[in-house]
Amino acid sequence: PEQLEEDLRPLNEFDPQRANELISNADVETPIEVQIETNSDNQNLVQKVQAIAQAMNQTDLFDATVETFEFGDFVGRLLDPSYAERGNIAVIGLSGTFNPGSFVDATHDIENFAQCCNFQRINFESINEGIENARFDSAVVCDQQDRASRYDELWQAVVELSANSYLDIDLTVGVHNTDVNVFDAYPLPEGMY
Image 1 (cartoon, one colour):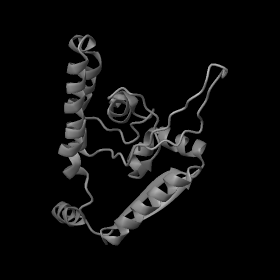
Image 2 (tube, rainbow, N blue to C red):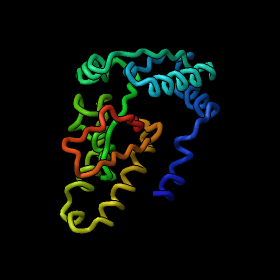
Image 3 (tube, rainbow, N blue to C red):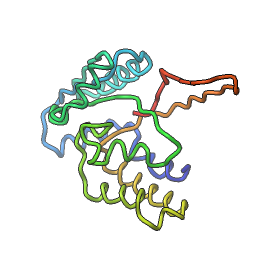
């Protein structure tokens, strides 16, 4: 995982000069109006989104605004199949597992469009096939190393595609003794977006 992170770092670094080059080659007028949306009940998340909008606006390439919604209303917006056509950037916290594919499956598999969490209708056959092969191919059932290798390749393709971004990962661990019945860590301070 460390080598994969290092290999993918150049694709994720903040580079306003490269952004300017890409926008110039795309022949679009700047500043590009961008609405970033998130839920209002997570102040850490709201502050991160505001910082992103501020950094975007400092480049003069974007006119970024932030809109916040009560969590239930926000989820309702995201699950509307027409949300992908609005062109907004959705920032939401996700809870995952130790499964290396739990996030790539949720955010990039077309089967999760208008569900959690392919809100932008990402649909690339190579990504869809990669997800299927990493999850269900008979060879990976008994070979965790093969499964991990396939997910490494899939993450490389996903990062290069740049259809979704992951800001950061927080780790919350709940510890309890056997006297505890029914344990819930809600609300989790989720940190993967």
